[in-house]
Length: 304
Length: 119
Image 1 (tube, each protein chain N blue to C red):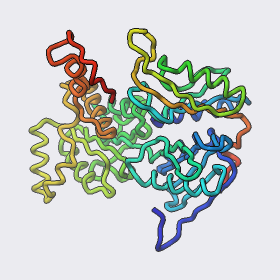
Image 2 (cartoon, each protein chain N blue to C red):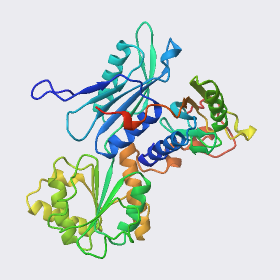
Image 3 (cartoon, each protein chain N blue to C red):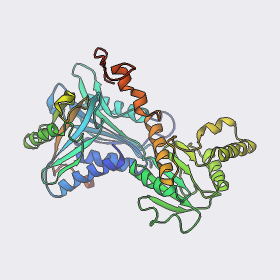
């Protein structure tokens, strides 16, 4: 995680106390600017005096490698352990916010929170599905960009809550939109010819975007796949494309389709399965027997 | 916490500072079982404004607000364990089935501000 060879990262540290307000601000701004930040707060320990103290590690997007440490936790030993903990958490994409216990003669409990570069939703094509999609994307906390090649479609009036509206040429749609590991693309242009051009660009993007969804019926998706293989793409590339797009909720209208796509994004982000929860939990069956509600079985009650 | 949640909490803290007020910040730092909000959810208790954000609505929030009052008074942070495992038949709002750990701290208006930081 630190560079052992090559140019050493420009690091800096400030030992003055880091308070809640400033920590919250740092987490917010660092992720909005494309960087990663983590904060440790002492929430328990042998000595009450350290409780409430904070330490932050910042990895700004620009310049890369310039790491910063801010704050102080009450002892140098604890600072060193916290920096180690935060660096590990920032480097592990599966790390979640929560309490970590720092062992030793004097165990401390540190609440660790991590903020990664803001997730982006790039909606390619500013038509009927794009409008509710931009809306839902913003609601879910994505930074939303809408692209179209027509002047009157990607407008503020039609997309009041999009962060960016760009007029692009579909032969090179992502020129002004740097794609990264937290980019989510939805291809909903007015014609499958454009969807295909954008799809090829998306598949070749490095680093690969987190999600590539493409609208289309089974027939149209199949035609796209045939074309991709004809154009020399390996068949395993097809696994990276979410098409037909969204969860199976019977969506028909543009709004319903946007909900189906939004549900798929949440599912992939949180690691869900897209099954109705009543079928996953089967509360009636598990606690009352398969028949129905007359014989409660109390012995095996267990919360998950 | 979504980016929007982060933003509204940050704004509430700045608003209190600009007005010269102390406020309390509550953070869910741990949960077990079913809880309405998860780890990371935050709420600002600003005596002049009210609540910004939520750590669970009816489910246990009253206990957190009680704690915030004490913390604003004494300045000593608290860790509150909120039990939401009351029996369903009591019709209490706290029947979600879980337990949550909430860290409550005071935020003073004269904490070092962002503008003074520079690396």
